Length: 246
Image (cartoon, rainbow, N blue to C red; front, top):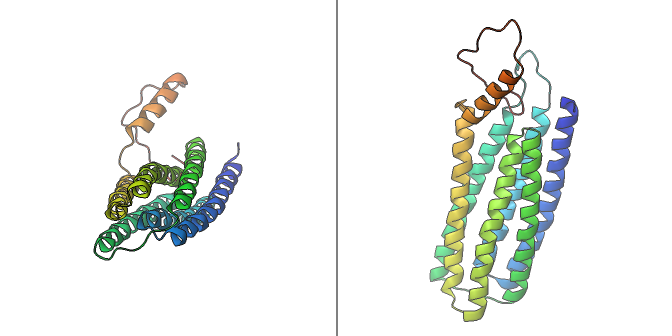
């Protein structure tokens, strides 16, 4: 597959993910307004991050597809790392905001309604998020897109937290103990914040061109299988990556 065609595939995949994320966000906020549950708000708030990060990723994929020029001799591939960094920061801020709201609701509790409907919506959205994340990660790995892989991991981490959130909401529905709602928000807000920190650590490492041992081993294995007659030996091999290119 040609480079231009690969970039078009990545952009098409990201457009689909953004469209689905917008629809999921609408559903989650509908669930929040129905239930008035800060636990459900946790999921809805992260959907804002999903949509924003998805749009940033789409822009970065568009920019990264531009060919190398005089001012950018290695191309625009590293913008994908900037996109992933912004996404990580947004996730971290969303997690912190959710924890804050959970603490506030401990002192200013509110009436929760139609929780069964909210649970159903949150659970369905979580399942769709997992499938979207799987789709994004597989495409990202196939076409070496840091932005798609980071976005997919975020979507899947959202699903894992949704599983625990649904379990907690069911417990809240059965027991009607109000502080469980706040505890869920603080717990999963913390998980979301940690996801953001993990993405930031990874992208910071890539921006500083930290050696990728796995990729080096893969390159050495490929070179060893296809030696050239005029080669003597390989010494002090270094690789630098610019988005999809190395």
